Image 1: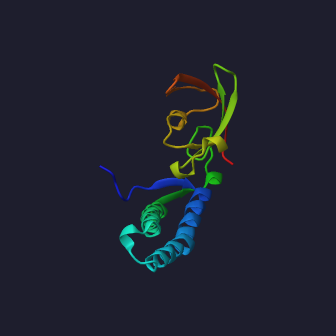
Image 2: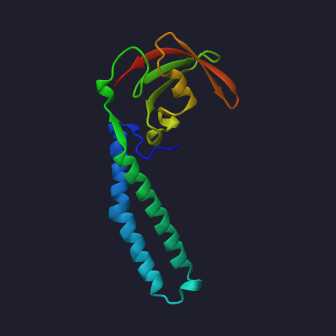
Image 3: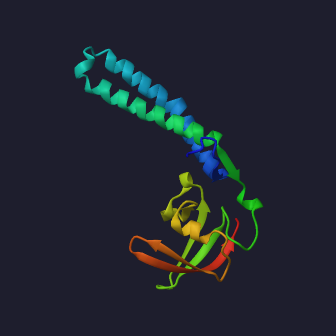
Length: 161
């Protein structure tokens, strides 16, 4: 069963990003869509008013996103990456890995789900690779099942920056 009080791990940067998005939705997007609805209403017949229906759909999206962000912000467990240390991989670690098949080196920071962006080197704590890396140390090997098969990596470096 899903626990509504479940803490959501994230970095301080990720937390600030969520708060900024929430503030933007509350202070800019919500008032804008209310204004758009009022303007569309002034055009008369609402049953055939595409602008009105589009604005109402946008309002529903904004309200859902606000509720989602408010829940995430209130349940955030902010982890100060600079206070984490050790040789084993934990949340917040920046990890350098060598692909054992291609010898290519990749670097990821393990972050919260809402912060993840693989193209920027931010790997979600819930991803198969991050889950496989947790608890590993430099020199350890990790096999990860991905859609195209199994990838094997060697942990080259672990930092908390």
